[in-house]
Length: 390
Image (cartoon, rainbow, N blue to C red):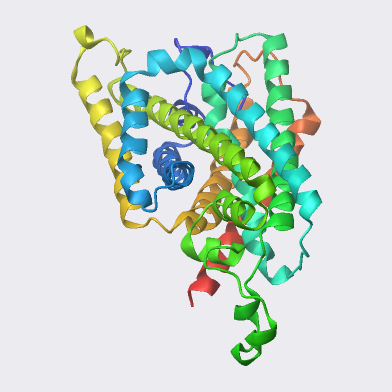
């Protein structure tokens, strides 16, 4: 992803995923890649829309998430489409703010969870969903890398620090995800005892209220903070403030994620439209409005409308979207398209490109391991989804 082109006026500041596919993929695959990227951004936006409406509903005690969804989606959509000049300078700050909030949330949750320490049971029959959910963060990194790359200079030191930042970010994300899951398992019951045994024996079993288990959260398509806060408020009132703080932090974090995803989606759509007309244009300057601008705005609103409509009619599909659709889309994008791009751009046909920090031979060979890993994850995701649907 760091083998950008500098000829024909294609400067790093104008690089987007579609431009990379257009340069390093065969013609047919480049169009397929463009469609795949737009579809992936749409799926990611859908997951953030569902999670965001739940987070705001949890904080403001709104029982129906559908009431929150229109405001959450369209306020941030309008900001991404028409206010990107306001968003762009603060992307790095907002991302740092989001990461800091996530770190604070995980630390607090882990401390509380280690104090409560509910019994955790393991069943490796469900390892597929857990594995695929984790790969969402790893496989989805390629979607935002070009956008973040436009914020640095095309020099060896900046590219080196950029790679280091990406690597450390992924490692940090993995560690925080593990700690968060551990904390949630320490607080929230996995299943309701009354649903795991014969009902005739419920006299000796303490049944849980509806919505107090991870099982019910999965069935209702809820993010894990919902049962987490609910259990703390009712069963551990001394920690109720923790549930409130975590819910607020998660709400802010998802807001930043949705805004960032929508912003990068708009940039990618503009790249697609710009490549069709092969001209440079500025969407935010309405004095220079042209057919390209109108098409780009229309395409942005079309995809954002798809996100909103699907979320509106499937408010309980969050778990399926993340563990299945989002995971498969991200993993296939890395395992197939990005792997082909890496293989082609490191070949002899592109040796003329000026690269400030070329990959070493060892790093180039690692692409095959990455390709195998993400393609296996894709196949696993598809097969497990089919088996669960039968």
